[in-house]
Image (cartoon, rainbow, N blue to C red; front, top):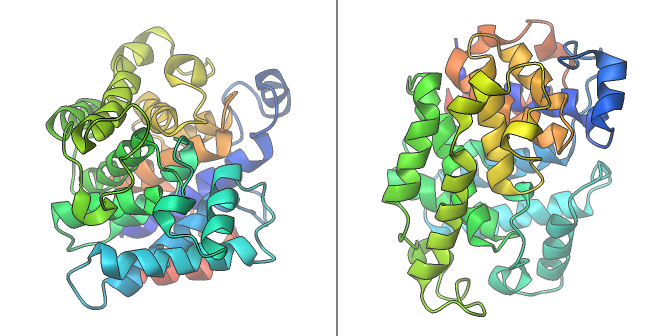
Length: 332
C-alpha cells in the first residue's frame, strides 16, 4: 500500500474535516460534533486553500524533477507560476490567507519573489502546503530542505516559516521511511539543533535575510530554528497530562503560525498513533486553525500508516481526487 497516496489524501481528508470548524468556537465545535470532533467525511468533501496550494507546490516540484537535479533556478519559476494560477483562479474562494494573497499579488505585479514575500509573516500558510517536498522520492537532503524552504519563502519571509516548512517536509519523509511516531518529536528537535545556523543561500539568495536588526544570514535563520524548537518542547508530556479529550491547542498552540501548526499536528498524531481518523478529528476539533492542523496531521498519519489508514470510501469522496491520485502515482 502506498504511503505517498495515504499522505496526499490524508492531508486533504484532514483539510476537509477541519474546514467547517476553522472559524467556530471550541464550544460550538463540541456542541456540533462531540468531544473528539468530526469523524465522518461528507459525501462531497470540499477542501480549502491548504490542499489547493499543496497541489500547486506538488505540480511545480514534479515539473522541476523532470530534469535533475532540482535547483532553485528550476523550481522557483514553476512554483511561482502555479501560485499565480491559483491566485487568479475562480476556485480560489476558500478563505485564503492574506499573506499568500498579498505576496501573489506583488509577484503578479512584477516584483521578484524576495521583494514580494511578506517578510514578517510566519503564518502556517508556509508549511501547510509543503508535504510534496517530503513525499517526492530521490531528492537529496539539500534538495528536500532547500525546496521546502524556498516554497515557503515565496510568500512567507520569516525564518520560522522556513524552518517549520523544512521540519514538516522531513517529518513526512521520515515517517514514510519508517520512523516510529513516538520518536518524531525528538527527531524534529534534533534537526532544530543541527540546522540552527545553516542558511541555504543557494536556494534563498542573499536578499531575504537582510532585514532590520539582522546582522548575518546565520543569525536570521537561527531565530526560526529556535522558535520551532521551543514549540516542539514538551509534546510528550502534554500527551500524558493534557490528554485526548482537551482542546489540542491548549497543549501546543493555536496553529495560526507555522511552528504551532506543526507542533499541534504532531501532538494530535502522538495522541492517536494507531488511529489516523481520530488524529485528524482531534485536529479538526480545536480552537485554532483547525483545517491546517488537521491537514498536517493527516499528511503525517498517512505517511506513517499507508492507504489502510483511511476508510476506503473516503478516497472517492474528496475533492481533487483525480489530481491527488495522479501525483500519488507519479511518486509511488
